[in-house]
Image (cartoon, rainbow, N blue to C red):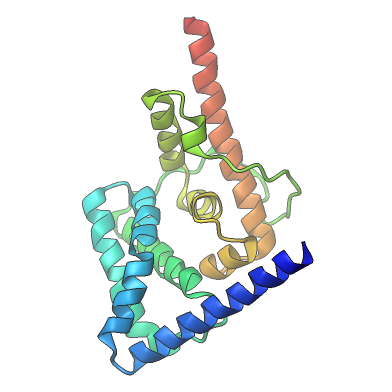
Length: 207
């Protein structure tokens, strides 16, 4: 057990050192190094952005802009967060900016009336649409529920449950206190559970 933890720490340090080496090469105009960064993260960034904006063409545009901004801003990357966290922060900010310009931010759900800055203790079961999938219809219900959340709830849910970021990483990516991250995650899961309960109740009534 102790050896396993030590191995994880060593791997984490090794990954961070490799990232910083790539960043340094990029700062020296090494396009091949930046290509490796793009290859490593483009699919994850696109997956996150697509669930934030829903339109695939718009998601592609924003994802491309993420890496343009990243390339232009590598001089300001100080390594205090992981490169992954930094890229998701850029992606989130671009999604919010795009929504504000289009004036089409999703309306807040009634669950968001709670005090989200008050830390909450709650179990941390991972939801996984693939494991919940009893059919195409249920998957659509899950995706629709995620899409109907406000950006502030959806972003935390996706980063934690889809991208496997720790609370601390999400806090850095979204510039939030850890307590707020936990509260928003709780509210997002409550929103999702409510949608699933409604679907299941409808199925029971029909049967």
